[in-house]
Length: 497
Image (cartoon, rainbow, N blue to C red):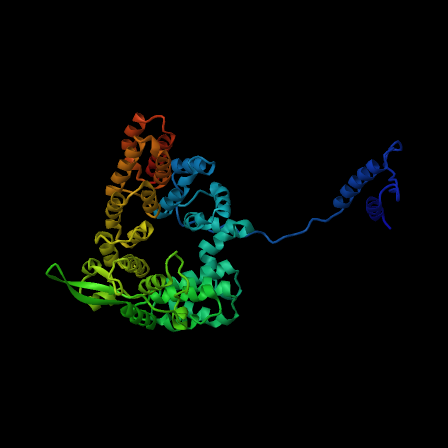
């Protein structure tokens, strides 16, 4: 037994049961056996390490040359401030602006930026666009930053073996990029491994088919409706509902036409076209297979829930063809229930159409539902329609909607779904709401919520108008904070021109 193992044994058994041997260099007056053991162990450790021969390692490949210039020095200083915690919420805007202008993050700030992405998943796609080639190179050296390889590493995405042997994240990235460039190849790759994939992975992989969705995917998606994974079946049904001309759409249209029919009625001596509603009477296995759950997610009756789901999955062209009218005319038709001739089904019909317009990205129907005075009282459903409109219409439609809704909570719900930047009519409406709330002490909570949304999304050009409001209401810290953030963003965007 050598000196090291004797010391280990003494440490395990205790120096009272097995004293450690005394090293020649140990002082004679060392009275504490435990202290002497630790001192001698330290000496032995240094002695053991001193005898090791240095190993060799493969040199790290140098970072590839960058193909984009770094941001200007002023923008570099601004990013350093943001990464240090000053106005940290504007980081996504800084990154998006940088990538959009063809700049990249300076190499010296990449470690701090990649660390931000490690803890905040929402930043990762933006970091991938702005980090440049050195960012991917750094990510390959540190497993904590490996997310960047999956999200934005071009070399990793082009790796032909990435699908067969890559991590789950890299395989998702491979499919996403392949769906954007060659959807049939992505379909063939997934089909080849489908039966071997666990259900959670099948669901995630299938969700990538949102890109490049076409009739060529229909057969595969129809088969996925019978998958043993619930999430897989749900995603397949949602994708088929977006696919024009699919057999799934025809099945839904047949169900929907059994629920809604046209009827001419005379009201006050005037002949009118009405929509008469009779929700599904029951639920069967074919409805379950097509993604219509037995129990509605909302707290409504099952029949109303089935009606909403059927309409949300029915091609909207069904109604323009059935009634031989444009979407705006269809939306404005009076609606009655087939049984009691009441209009309580109107909400279910309009809500189903609104969900269909969002799913099918139909701007004409979204426009009609927003302007047609529909009876949907779920503000979130109307706010979601804004995302379907062309960019040039969105701000004006959002401004109209927040003027139309009742209650401050509804204004927040609408704006929460409205991405920035808020400009034009919407910026005017938001500034007007801020001014009104600042004048009402009881609206302090609403003002704070509105300021929190506006500091990231309201155009910085509004800072001069906010200055005036803030001067008149200097005691309102949300307004002061909003004004300072808008000024910060204004300078930030000026530096990135």
